Length: 152
Image (cartoon, rainbow, N blue to C red; front, side, top):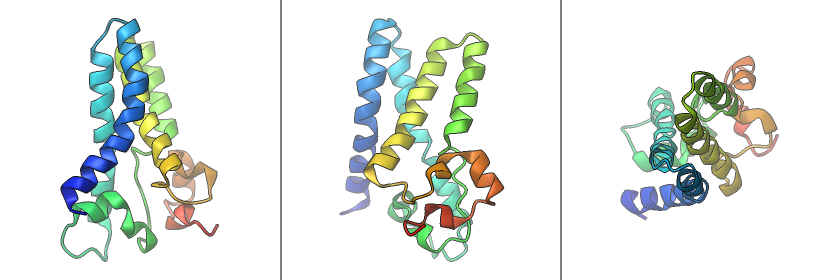
């Protein structure tokens, strides 16, 4: 499968659930910005894969499919993925709501959190450690790759 087909398939699997949630929120809230920003956030979240992949010491060249497919997880000493963390997005959503940006907060929460949930459901976020997508837990464990091992 070439890279374009991989990217289309990858984001289709992420965007369909986001649109199923953000679409009605935008419709009933009469705010078209909710599904638009949720779509944007669903795609932006994977930027941390690119940064993580560039920090991977055994990388040879650059391969987008390898970066988004997380093949490097098996041998990278550390996995950072700061945007793939529930606690970060719940905190940002709370701040946005506090500041009165309700539509933006809903977009943020749906876009980022639904992406992380679909990663777990589809098996993109492997591992048996339940808290692997909590940034504070990963920080305490020094972003150890073993949090993403299936064997633990």
